[in-house]
Image 1 (cartoon, each protein chain N blue to C red):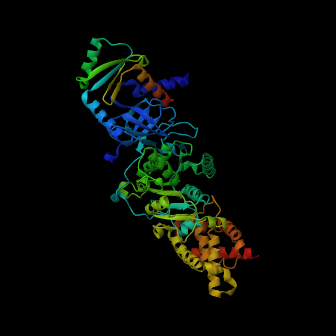
Image 2: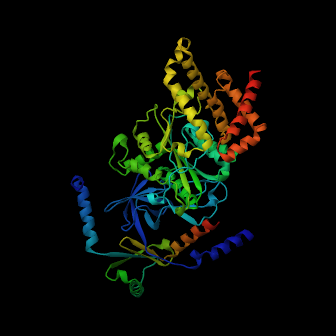
Image 3: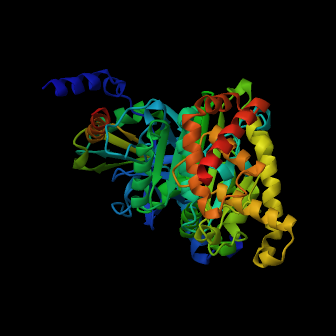
Length: 501
Length: 94
């Protein structure tokens, strides 16, 4: 009885019950029901992007306005809608509930909780479609976003407020890079949002389990529009995720949003456009497919102090077919983002994971987003790897080459091996710096390639036990002083001698 | 684009415009047939529909009260509508 009394009290207090008000609502009639899209007549004053409600209880989003027809995509089950049904306009544009209550939860693009746990009432709503902050409100990107992946932090550094595209074939480790970045943010105070568009339900369950195991769920929100969800929700999911992120950004926090993946988002929008009979362009995509992604990714930015000082970093993921990054959607998004990470199947199969092709991957923010320590060691690394790539074709003639070339090839191969990393095992800044420093100074040149991994593990454990102070110092100061280098040298050579025996 | 609309579509649009222009219709939906007096009272409280042609439709599903439809707008004063809102309210609070 107590529970019932509580409910009754809450209802009494709610003003929708005590103050009964009727207003003129717009209504329309369903004329046609297509796959997820309905065409209505009436609704003469409805605005673009407004929400409507069907008699079956589903909501709809107005996406097409013509003289006598309104096109509405159904944000829910469209099977219960029949022609002749009445539709009411709700008078407000689509907005998604935002707030700290969403942290650690799984929501759908409408903001409803779908993880089976209790539903929390949220009072703040952010519009799903929003114009990106103007140039005046922005600040250049110069604070690094630590991903914990050696190859990325050294060669393709990401800054807070940047958009970095992760592109590659299926099964090359795109989601893994994004998840490792999320796991790395544990002590960084960055709010993470993982937006799954058109993914398999099993994959999303795996992702959530992985985040929970690594204690990353406390600062992460999962926005889920899986392959079974209506196409309208798959279309809106990235915008909802961005709106949720903007709430935290406006509060001055740093936010990371992963869009996994935008290829399926483009497919969902193509489906809606074709059903609405909009003219089809290249590859049957509608004419505004570029605007679809550009308006989403432009909302990722770094705000200046007057606007709160927060930032929103976007990591869109795009899947290519047969490594073709010159097809329509990848080229569109490459031109929008501030850099790309290209993952190749050949490298993946050869055991180089993360399968980053550092030759054509780039970060247009680059060194501005690196800590001093990393900048000191990464310059050497870049040079060595570039020389290695140039001479890679000669590696088959190893016996006939001069000493210089052999040295370069050896160094390059060792460094490539150093950049290999197990998945879901992000490194701290100091560990990355130390490893790359050791490689750059040539301490690994004499170790056979197959033993490099072992050496790395041993060096790490030595570092964590004997060099704990040094580790903390580098992590805190973010730079490498002369005495730091001397201390590093001691530990590295000590491990080497131990290893050689 | 207009030239490429089919003849059928153009005829449809034209007829639609003619119908909308000719008479302004308003529909009053009630649970039982309303008397002249009641209809005049309603007409007085809604000055917007003074010059509209009012037709009275009976739908017992609305239980009591009435719904007024004019142009593209609907005003729901029925008991069924109120109960539906209450249902939604209960659902949200619980």
